[in-house]
Amino acid sequence: MWLLALRCCAALKWDLTLIGKFGNVLTLRSLFERLLKWAFPEWQSEDILTNLLTICSMVDSSSMSEGGRFAAWLYARWVVGVDIAARFPDPLPRATVSNPQGQVDPNLAQAEALKTTTANIRTLTESSICILRRFTSDTSFFRLGLKIPLKECFESMTEDPPLQPVFVSSKQTIPSPRFDRSVADVSPEALLAKTHFDLMCFEFACGDIAKGRLSLGQVLNHGSNAGSNDYASIDSAALEGYCQAFGVRPVNDADPIVAPVTEQTPAILAADNERKLLSMIGRHLIEKTTSSTQPSTLYIDVTSENVVRSYLALLGVTNRCLQYLTSIEAHLARFARVIAHQMTTLYSSSGNNRTITAAVVQYLCANVPGMDAALRSQLPSDQLQRSNIRIVDFVQRAIVLTPPPQPGAVAGLLSGGNDLWQLLLSYDSAEIKNLMLRIVPFVVPARFNVSMVLGEEVLTRVAAGPHQEYITVLMSKLEQLAKLGKIGAWQTTVNACGRELGPLGNDTKVQTTFTFEALRIEVRFGV
Image 1 (cartoon, rainbow, N blue to C red):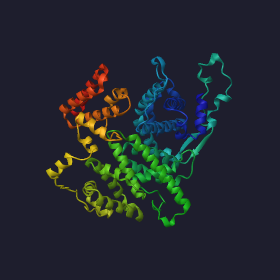
Image 2 (cartoon, rainbow, N blue to C red; image 1 turned 120 degrees about the vertical axis):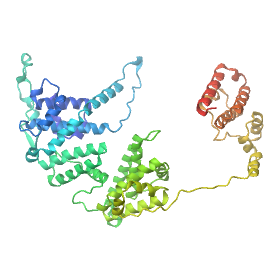
Image 3 (cartoon, rainbow, N blue to C red; image 1 turned 60 degrees about the horizontal axis):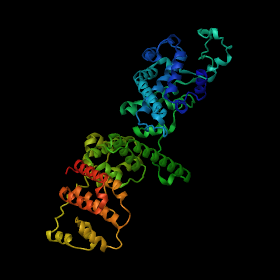
Image 4 (cartoon, helix red, strand yellow; image 1 turned 90 degrees about the vertical axis):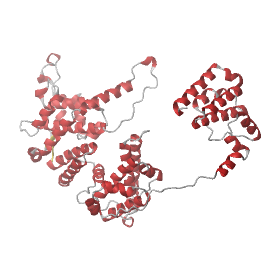
């Protein structure tokens, strides 16, 4: 079964992205560990994972077999991919709807097993990174390349004679792959580009921008001479996305990121609009994943990056999103850091992109108070001069000096008016009842909110009609008095509400509900 599974992986051309779609971390870990044990037969009786550092020391050794070199390279890349995926939050597992007698939930048990296995695999990340770096610096790796085993290497089980039960324990009768039977030659340039690409993805996920940019340069240098190869191919869309994130333009790519509209055909416009739409959907999903009741720095960084990219793509940004990033000083600082990173790459960008960025910076300085100071704090003077963008403090923080209203005007506003206005201002139960009788037809105002504690237990037991509307108004007055901190008036209104409820007010459960409401108000409002 192991051989058949590995044969399927070889048929998929050892594409870890495709292989990951047909198995989870548990199955792939067992599969790749079996591949390592076949590649290193001297470690059959030992834990192969404890020997990763030994593998790392053997990368540049001539004693290492071709199968071992391939297995170590593949396993190290897979471990790095698992670590990158684990840095993004996964959706919470859902419990089984029907779970009688409190049995162990299979969904939750599997999710816990996957979480534990992922944590164990991530402990091998450092050794895997060491292996990949040794591969990139190994002269024999660059000179000879790597032999990629094809699916014919895993057909031993179908060709060997049937096994006899008495010889099952013999190593000679156990089928094993033949790594040298049928292999694919991959150019050293393509392998180095693929290895540097995996390292660059890991460094980007860790936030190590300096190392990631160097690795990206190696990917572009080796990839330009590698040609096309199915076994070490790099997704062009992913590479383009990383180039935009690092502010690096691919080799032999002199076209501006945003081309003039006059040079675009309808087909190009349709493809560009589809790409922008998919990008916006992806960014929305990332924002939804990283958001919470208390926004984290990750959510702020993602939102800032999306706003800047929307501006550069000539897309609109909502005022609510812009206000969220600029209303708090800490958010404004992180937003300015993203803009400053874009400005540092202007000296190597096209003229069109430079013009758009300059317009965005001047627009933000003209509409966001404090943006100029935040940008100056993020940009050294030499980089600010090199970007050739003027940061001008166009706007000052507004100081609103509104004179207070005259006492007579306030008294006149609160002293009289129509019946509905009096109902909004009054907290007297008798006056409220008389006003409701004069207002025909009466509708409970939308702003009159009743607490959930009283609404679920009391209002549901009051018959629908004018009496229920009256009780609703009284209970909404209770919530208003609690927010105002007038506990004396609140107790008076509670007594009036109890009298108006009649026999229901003497119910033990209703009285207990009012007691809970008093405790809730004391805890929440401190009255």
